[in-house]
Image 1 (cartoon, rainbow, N blue to C red):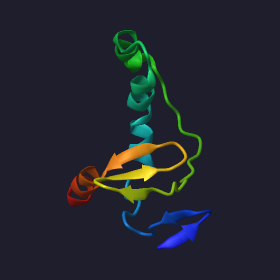
Image 2 (tube, rainbow, N blue to C red; image 1 turned 45 degrees about the vertical axis):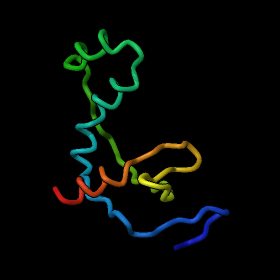
Image 3 (cartoon, rainbow, N blue to C red; image 1 turned 45 degrees about the horizontal axis):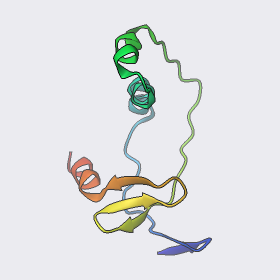
Image 4 (cartoon, helix red, strand yellow; image 1 turned 180 degrees about the horizontal axis):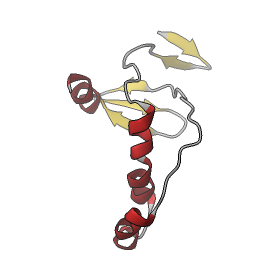
Length: 89
């Protein structure tokens, strides 16, 4: 465990295993999921063209909390069971 700015950070629990090409493929659906009017947005996804010029890996410190990992600044929550499932694929 590494303590950073009052936050306990657990190192190397889950390594990055998503290739940049697959991350780029998920951009359309991620944008659509942020949309408020999904009924109008989803049918237009085929018209959306995405071109990746560069990529940057950014590590966010998630802390364990019960059955989840939580990123303290954004309160983004990832269920531990989902990470285990992804690791076993």
